[in-house]
Length: 332
Ligand code: ATP
Ligand code: MG
Image (cartoon, rainbow, N blue to C red; front, side):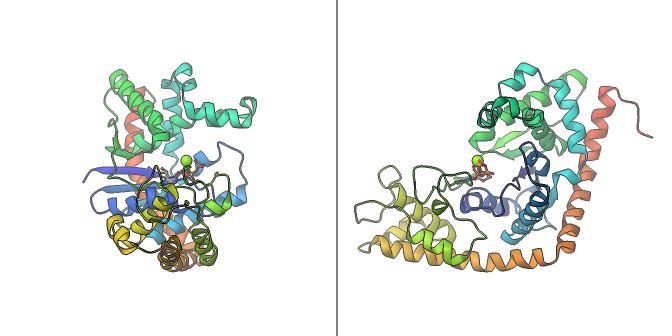
């Protein structure tokens, strides 16, 4: 089985519906066909100012949610990045292979540092892509599922892998972007032309998986639609209605075409009520499972520990080869 690797940052108290339908749901499915490594990049989370208590809670929260949506800690390797020290160790080597100009061209750094005022951005934010390259290269993953926003970083990862292999000898697999089969893109309920995002403009447009189901159902029922009456999938003309159809479809397993037929002659209110119900049926048991994991943090930490051990057994081999090729003395 080829190996895939993917991470999701612990930067909020809850994952949102876009994270789940656009990413995590695919992660669950990929476990059948791939040797999957899923990690929580807590080291990336400190590249911007953070609160230590919140970070620890969010990391456990993220792990609980991953397990609760169906990531199987036996079939897949699930771990926290900081518990595998090889990430930091390899990142240093890769930083030394990256040109300052090359790193300066990373658009995510430009965007994120501009937001904080460039003077205040951390050097860690600047070297974020090299840590990400280390995350990927340690596991010799053949495929890495990446969104548009991470494409440039994956390109850099590929360049660094090739550069190392050419200069010092083969140590890395050059990873390919994973083309996911039509993963759903979810839009803000209040501004359906904008992507649903934790940093979006209005809380009313964002569905967090761990919010009170009643609150989320109400957000669905208050979603922005349009002045027509017809329920059909037309993302350009009818982004709000189309977004609800997609959410409903992916959660309920009914195709969009089936839903269009089912709602023929009915009104937007019916679509909203049905979608709110489908969402509630999904989040109620999910929240219960998350609570069960969080009620037993020792057990959760044990699951992460097993994942970290398994990750280290792969990562330490890669790092040892790198250290040897680069000319470090053998370990004692
Ligand atoms: P930010 O606003 O800080 O970028 P975000 O809400 O976009 O946060 P990320 O942490 O960037 O969330 O994304 C985590 C994963 O979820 C990524 O794989 C990303 O592609 C996916 N994702 C995020 N938002 C959506 C969305 N609205 N629809 C589909 N997938 C999404
Ligand atoms: Mg994002």
